Image (cartoon, rainbow, N blue to C red):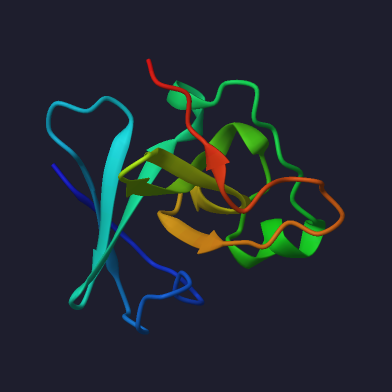
Length: 122
């Protein structure tokens, strides 16, 4: 089952679309495919795979997606599979307001987080 998400600004690398589809990848807990047009990003649910990951959004970023309560946020990170394993982008998470289905990819400022962090194998 996929859900439709609205992005005021499309995620990096995806063309502007009014709505993107977020669908779980079958057989992979906490892995989602975000599609819009002909492009696709793989996103990991940070709550499942990176429970200690706790980036801070600015008030302006939270306002962009209408987020007033942190409990409404779904925190996702872009996953990049490769021959040597999978890396995740911790510097630019995708945050979805679970109440409104509005999301955005934010670049986190003044936070020492890697653009390509190795994902530990489970």
